[in-house]
Image (cartoon, rainbow, N blue to C red; front, side, top):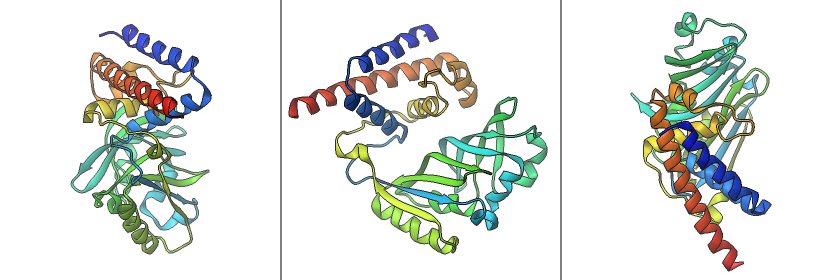
Length: 265
């Protein structure tokens, strides 16, 4: 399956959105974001947003990351390895030799592999052994999601999805870990009030989530299928197949639920 065929599927999405109103377009985009969580959205799912200033984060192991990178941003989670969350991250820097700083970062960022590197940025497969990540990794009813980032200018921001009980346990533990006042807020997922998000197979979910976060569906497009394939260690044809299958599922589900919503209004 080539990229041109998959682009036809993208064009179908654009055509669908072009003939719908703003309300329905908003629903579609929220549905697509829902798939990135790889879970069924419901009224019982919530999220916890954590924000810590650069100054407040000084005593945390992750603070050293800003010594070398101007920004680190989570692209997608890839699971738990040896009780440590693993993920793909994008880092931005001012000309750092990443391999030469691996040992200095190992308490906060264990770099397993450089997936792609360019002028002032890189995509890394890494593990995050810091205390905040370990607390979340040990909780069965919560998981880290984008947007999650650390930067010199904007400090630390993390988004955690989960059940109300799971997020409450995490919030209580984090308040002991970080005694200074920080911004932590538990909110309901908006998507849960109106639609159900069917599950996608694990690898397909990872591919579509990575594509969204890397800007594949943005205008102008932020990456192509070859770049996604390099980041995930897959063949370009495999990425194309996963994207087309995921798009078909998402579009059909969105169309069915939108029709039901309109008929009930």
